[in-house]
Image (cartoon, rainbow over all chains, first blue to last red; front, side):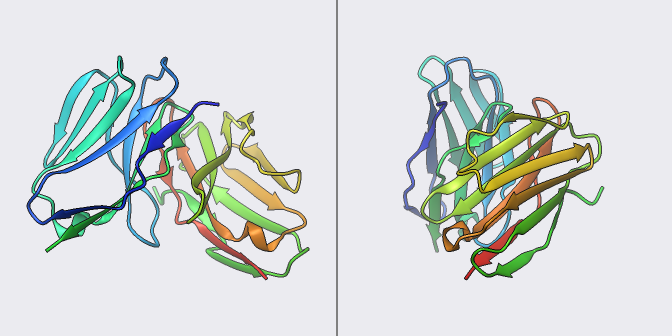
Length: 107
Length: 112
């Protein structure tokens, strides 16, 4: 069974800090990786995707992929209270998700 | 495009009844996914289709669950008979190959 693992948290950071979210996966042949954000009572929505080793930046968000170590991470710089949500990692075309990490940004 | 459309948004049913959830994917998307989300188990992949063909149904919990995709614009997830432990939010999502998936608004199912 292909597995995607995330620390369920909760993770709490102060406003303005960097939040670091991590995801590991078992299928070494995985090619595509997605980070979603889900607010309470809402549907998951895409934040970023990454296919190549290294960093990918989009505004305050940076995705980091290390295929050799089989992990992908999401950094949120200058965290805002509006970033408080559950962050979900998905791997590959079959879109298997990890359990999600609940992030709280405290004012 | 209106996005992925799910119906109904809420469903309350009695134990033992049949429940049918519906999904209309985004036009042009060739993959469709059904998920179940609970606090205890998170977002579980139940089944997914490529080009209307079921590819992996290993997440379907029991024979009481079945899913169909008769054409590219419609899919159903059926639970028969329903049980209280089936109470959850069920999401449908669609995507093109190797792009991100777009989610519907979900169906909140309560079995009493």
